Length: 519
Image (cartoon, rainbow, N blue to C red):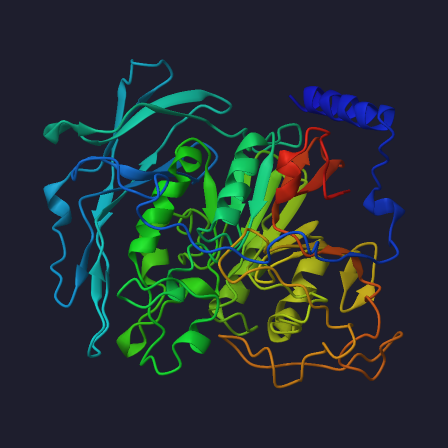
């Protein structure tokens, strides 16, 4: 398998070179900073799709599965999740009884011959707002079933639902991942962030689907249901601006159900690994938050001993993935830091040579938006990632694309991770176009306060920006930045070579194989 992938990689590179395309490598860096500004012929944002849109509307009867999604568990296990029943929204809601519908998956390696059966568990959750005029929500029944003992690199067919009610889904199919090994790698890994449910989001997912990923990393900010009030009034790009007198940050939870249907054609066949963003906080009374995120997504938290859906790790072939939580305690004395240190120490680079990390808000970012917002997290954790040789870090939060030169503590360093921002999925808030080094665009130090954690904004102590909060030009650690919607594809070919490609949404309509950025 490893020799085949390397051959495929070399053929692909030869084709690109033959077409006059020269792809730089990180060994060639650091690179002179490049900026491609927003194309004024494009729209900076688009409205959300309505819930009656064909991609968001419910298509099955009440007890039948919908919003079907896969997630990785262990190298020989996969989670299958889905929802049955009807969500309720109103002044008074009565949760459904999960025991009324079973959670079972029938599966096998031949279509129509689903000889294996696994059972799982189910739950419901509620989003409650005890304020006058606000509506409450309770979900359909959310099912999670873990399929164990699967063979690697094998096509499996499956149906999910409750056979006793004759309420099973249509047959779906997935391919299991390769086992951990320096010779085995997933074919393509799609990276998306800050997606939402706009027409731009649709283009992102359609383009990603064309690129046929075998795994999806969703680096936070999923549905933007919190850009609505509970009555479902049209979504806005800035909740606090539109509703300054709201007693709490409201949400319209039916957007989550629409998002699950929107994603099902992809996530029912391709595992998607999600980490929380700030738009998943969704506060309720009495300090309750992240309720929907925790209920809807199955993640391998117990399998990796984190025991928290806010941070976890998993293997896929020769890659060890670490998903970190920026909206829970990340300090050195906290449980996440302790888990991260142990997880990194347990990675066998002879088995999984590649080490990829993801979390929502970036540590390195030259846009005005969210500039130095999570500097506290960087100061707490960066040294661990550097010491253990993390190769690549993916983040979102900033609604644009940016690839850094290898950097550690704001200093160029060839041994540091490659940081990439892909918060350009297409959400309702729109694209970020201002850079902190543009004249008059440097944020004030009191700006960009994180929704969790402290404020640790700093002035630079070395280099051209010494003594300043912002650079006067694109920072040397920023290699390429562009204000466009899109997604990324990571292809790992062996223990030393991988190809990163960022695709602009507008390039999906071109026939010349155009890409936005490649290294």
